Image 1 (cartoon, one colour):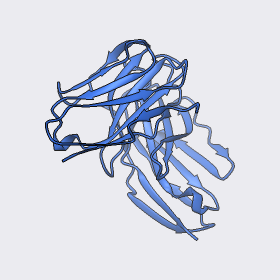
Image 2 (cartoon, rainbow over the protein chains, first blue to last red; image 1 turned 90 degrees about the vertical axis):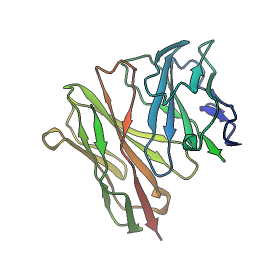
Image 3 (tube, rainbow over the protein chains, first blue to last red; image 1 turned 45 degrees about the vertical axis):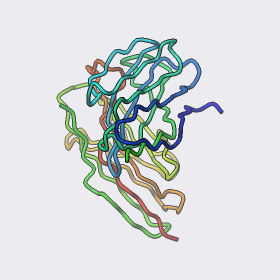
Image 4 (cartoon, helix red, strand yellow; image 1 turned 30 degrees about the horizontal axis):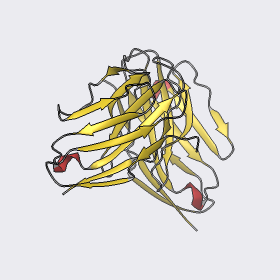
Length: 116
Length: 117
């Protein structure tokens, strides 16, 4: 399809395990965002890429969280040594234009992470 | 720091009723952008509208309309003649022009709208 694709759709991890969440943005989109959405809450910003450059990672909650977009397209969000408080839906979004364009974001369906 | 408040956690209406979702925001920037997104049960946020801070003209799109009032820092969303398919969580969001991370959005807590047949 032509939308933002995220995988896996659901992930269950035991506390302490590492997980990797994948995002395939819309082809040609310059900007890519990761958001974290806890149950019953609005999404919260984690990090932002413009092409392959990670311009802002101020929203990452700890150094256990790491994101990359090495070729400026697919992005991976990695969480090391998962904790129960990491349980949330992780949303990826992309937009055609770069920073300061404030263009509408196209969101994926998210990955629901449950840490047991 | 910016903040978006959606005071209505849940709203329940009967089909064909009109419903207004409230959004109040805080920002120190003079240039900013306001958005509404819809999140159906599938989870994907769907863009509905974007307005910039210099355009206070109200907008209508089919059954949807938006009322932007800078004087009260509000950007309310009205659905006329609601339908069951309108049932979803609706988020209001803000991005500031001076923000370094592109179009980084600050979301409200969301309003769960249920339209009953």
